[in-house]
Length: 415
Ligand code: AMP
Ligand code: MG
Image (cartoon, rainbow, N blue to C red):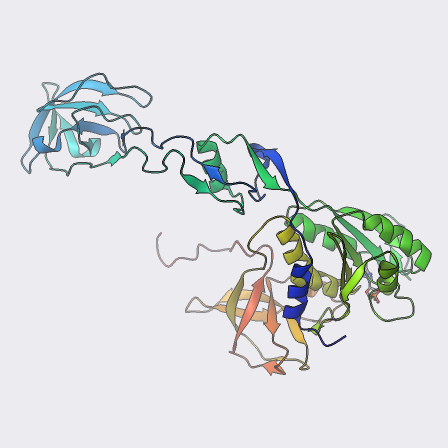
């Protein structure tokens, strides 16, 4: 196999993944899903001209720079329909969201008025026609397309869906994902402590990476490095839309994952990518199902999930945005690497005096040092063509989960 770059490996993965079919869910259960249908407005919104303020509906021609006194003919609350036409010299008291009465062409807010002793209201400022009126259909017109298929359902989208009374909607199904760890040395979470064994952390880190995408995976457990036992596990795993196998995908004599997947009918598309960590990563497919052989080293397994599994699963769920957001950050210190492979450096981010991002390594970058991943805000990408980056140099950082929030307000002075 020719040397495969991270980018070409990502392209290869995306060529072999199929978007899941759709299912109907209730609005209340749709957060984070992706719309599989176009949504149209089922009415004009607002359904009539409404007041944008608590105040008085009046005829703008009645007002001038000098004070005018208007007689109040009606009180219109939100939900009421007006019964009086506003004539010259008159106004109706109106609440936010209430329909503007016939005759009136503007609303003046209550703060710009004064009640007179005789019950009339005094207005001492002129307004233009349409002032503080929300026009019929201003937000959406009946029949208008408001959301397209492929839209991620955020709280704002849920609000729009409720506005168009969409109690049920079609979303893309989430892929069913199975996770299998392999290795004779592994100790299960519920097994007694054995100083000679390695705790199985990969199953849980991968589980959480799936959960962060809104997928609840099935943990198949631990398979020993025995081709027959492995085949049993892999067979079960291949019933899922996506199978993630950790460990045993390298070229050691006890690394049976690749040949066993092949024996079960999986076509392997690659089994090595020019990256660090994560070099021995394998990917295959059988019909619409996909299988990843992830390296056993805990950081490698997580980084390979980020680079290959995450875009694949997001595509299956119907997301048009497949990749982590990247930002530019200045390096706080030099980074030295061996050229030839794309290097993913685990970094924390801070801000400099100008508000730009500064990236610093989380410490020991060994692919076994899981703390370097646990503490990271992002993965700094050093291109394969470079042998390192200098302090102060700008580099791309892929943001990880948890980067949507920060400790301070992020604004100078008062908001
Ligand atoms: P392998 O890819 O099977 O050669 O494993 C590489 C390294 O990762 C070995 O040191 C393993 O002990 C370790 N490893 C493999 N699987 C896991 C796992 N599920 N959890 C934690 N470490 C693992
Ligand atoms: Mg192993």
